[in-house]
Length: 196
Picture 1 (tube, rainbow, N blue to C red):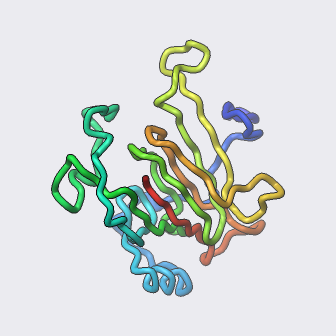
Picture 2 (cartoon, rainbow, N blue to C red; picture 1 turned 135 degrees about the vertical axis):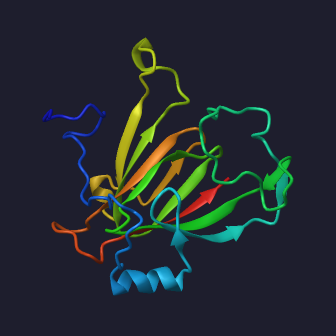
């Protein structure tokens, strides 16, 4: 294994702080503090990993700007086929969710949104990895795309982000990081996302 990373701005190769459950059909119990948060926020398991709950769905509907331009490969699984209205020609102006990663669900798998998403840190630390698949190839090398990685957390003086924006068309993944030297069962990353 190389001692340096190929991702610009990342000094050493990335390695998970928590190992994802290799058999997601087996259920382990979250810590009682984490279970309290899951219950209080009415969080559900998310298909991409972690937990989520919808916070808000803007009642304003707008023409769907994504009808005519689709960069979605045919083998991609969509998580929502149609909006709540059932009319694909319109969409809600925005939706908001809570999103939670825990030591038992420490990874949000790569996915992409069609529209811009604004993320806000509520609690914890994590790493985001973005693949800019919608941009030109890097250095003219076919299929080579720009990769970006950053830490989200409270230590903004060290470059951690507490608010970050991911434009539509970018692949993104998230990973739980411990807040201290050693992570425990009560570590978690809780954020909100507003999709526009």
